[in-house]
Length: 522
Image (cartoon, rainbow, N blue to C red; front, side, top):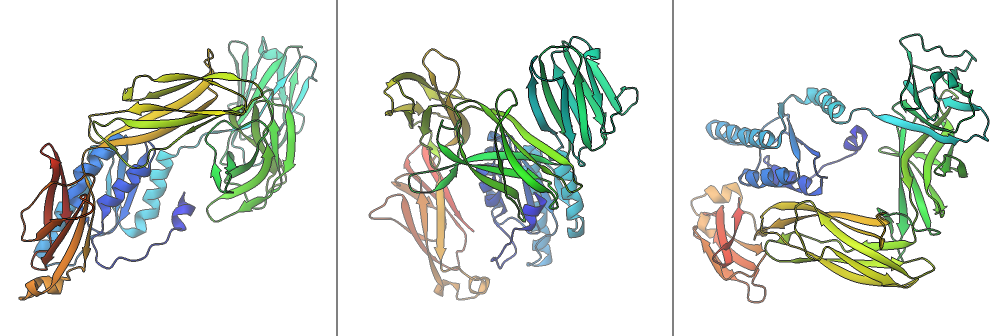
């Protein structure tokens, strides 16, 4: 993440205050539920009036806002500056406190230290999966466990043994581990042995089975080295996009591997596809690119008809083999479900269609159940539909969402399964926000300079603006000395003119008494 931040560049601006709250609101809109937004700034907020809206939107998604302030603006008279600073600091503190965050007032030379601390608290290290396999009764009794030189701890979990004496582990020198020191621990519970080795020697460890029972072996490590992957599809127009669905049997995808903390001296990379028993069914060399922000590799890959795991192997910088795999079992299917996303905010009190298309890619006619659920109970009946779909055909249907709660985020999921089965074949999850009436933009041209506004003939300098609302405007009110007209073609737009004696103004507009939105100019 630090590399990604370092790669960012900024430009533009001119005056010191920034639209900090607008930036926070944009970040909240793009963030996942229950995540964190980090605000780095050395400027005051030009749009502090919208702080309460940011708090409501953040709390609706469970967002925590953390501030790292490295400076303030000093462009006014000292008295005005102090007042502005106190007001803006109070705004930052209110947002942070209301969302469970903190305001850090630091020098720029402290930024790296504080950021490292915050990231360490937010992104704690986790266990990486190294290998998984099922050792049947017909398989041999010796199993190699390849430990790389960047492994801090080795954890081997064996399901199947009746006692600890049925399993033994030898290090790369052939010495059998006695689990008698603080660096090596072994335990058994419910026919499951767990072996934990701290700071294991790199090389090939050998796991030995002394009784003929089937084992299920899971090998995990504590290590900075880990991987993730995505399946990338190509649409009919040749556009690539990340698939968030179960892959379709027989179709070709691009397997995108992302590697974390891989030393650039590592070599001999390969992608391994493992079946649900951990047997390698496919392997291919992989070219790894060490980019500024990411370490990635891409491979064209035809989806098999059975479930599978994805594993990356290679040789680390010290010459030892490493393996890392993603512990999620991928389930190929013969059905596709497309849910049309909802763009923009949803109007409260108005039912919103959620449209889906289900496609049968199998060889026979199948009956599917399509279901929608949400986290706030905003789905209108019916919440499920049944469709009989011929092979190669598709059917489109709709559900509806509605809410009367303003600024309410909802998460909804549309899923498909074979009629009578509880196994979900495809599902898609989206978030949406219900809002009341709002003003989406206010454009002013030309801008009044501070010199023009403070001159004795400020009335000779004029400006014009356009306010855009989310509804047709029939009533409007403005308390300042400006002229307003409703657009003759598009009643969502108000055209406003004035002179530089009036730089800041507020417009209230509505299309019925109980629906009011407000636009500000600053």
